Length: 228
Image (cartoon, rainbow, N blue to C red; front, top):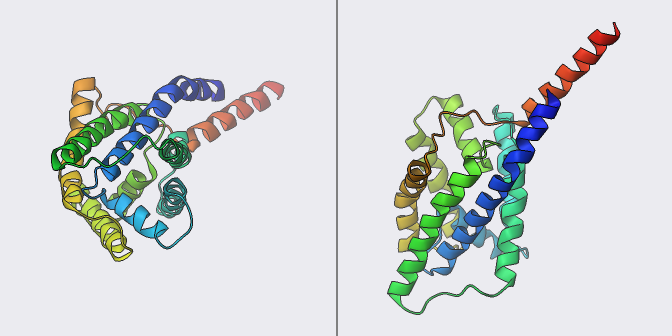
């Protein structure tokens, strides 16, 4: 049982890592467009204006806080959740260190960079979520709050994003027209990638850490029964 779970994880890891890398590129493209970042990135950048750490590191710290809160409201992380927290932060810092990204000088160039970032974020989500190794920490928090409050996805997601956005703006994060565009179109981008890729997120259950633990316990019981 444990072996089967581990094989499932190993087979899906390349897809997961590819998706997380694409998402990291997409996040930086939206930031470097110079039109305003997404709500969470407004918060991240606002925070590093006051703390001497990198964008990738603040992303990891916030991810850990979010996953801890999520756990206490009943959301069990998956391998993909943990790798999301670590790898996205690493990828963002490595990509920034190359100095290959820059903000276009024209409005059309900025809009194009923002559009490309949004488009490839959808495909990054397709690969990463399609690995079925666990939702991202922020999505996990949303799902946990939905279950606890019985409120709609729209209501909970809006409350979360507006809250982090307001805090980010107060901290000096880059709010702009791009922030509004991202908020209004990111869902469509992900949904379109799912549709074009033929992936139905409702059709497959995500693996969590519990699957590995239960697999280990099952194997131990079999060994005990065999000895008895």
